[in-house]
Image 1 (cartoon, rainbow, N blue to C red):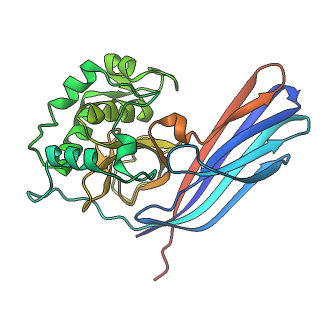
Image 2 (image 1 turned 30 degrees about the vertical axis):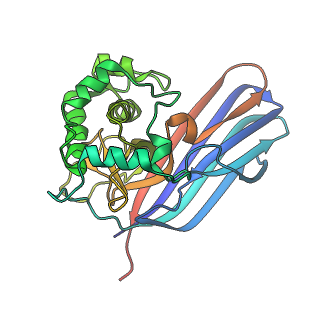
Length: 296
């Protein structure tokens, strides 16, 4: 079990003062299996009106921020204390096959945002791609156990692709990152999602955090200095959702904190919205995930 203090700061600097801003903030981690929020605080400088809003898609805690006064900068700080107690999945010969999971997903009548049907199909930012589907299919034999196949595909992506922040942009489509065999966590998650959905398997995009400092003697995980992205794979009604991190080739466990879940990044971007003003803006994001002492 781990206890974390999370500090996520986003600062916007505007070339000219803006008169109005309306933003959706998805910064408070959701209640999800294996994690529990003990404290959460949101502050905005130089101030603005905030109120809860409904998530239009996916699973997210949404806060609407409205700034109605001239501002040359805007700083949004999110602080959370969260307890994570999440076991690592262990593949078993008794696990359902990919064929069985795909059939269960097609038969599902769960209409909620946590149901498998919402994550079976292509999404605006993650279309199906013939080359990605064929490449991923090499690990997705329909008779293979679902957990074994999921971690095998994640580890293949981690092994065959290069983490390179200069290779892609936030709006780079999956086929371009696939062709370059490089990118960042968002690219690797999108490639894996495209391949899983092409195989008829429900898979969701996760936005969240990794612990900043690893335990003694363990390597530092890639992507710990910012929000991270990985994949949730639905493994049937008994196993439920299992997280896999293709950037690091590991399971989602106690090092991972789920912030929001959706079909793709557009559903769960930490901050989006509109600003009325002229001139350019610069954005700086700082993330720190500090492990705390767990009380006896």
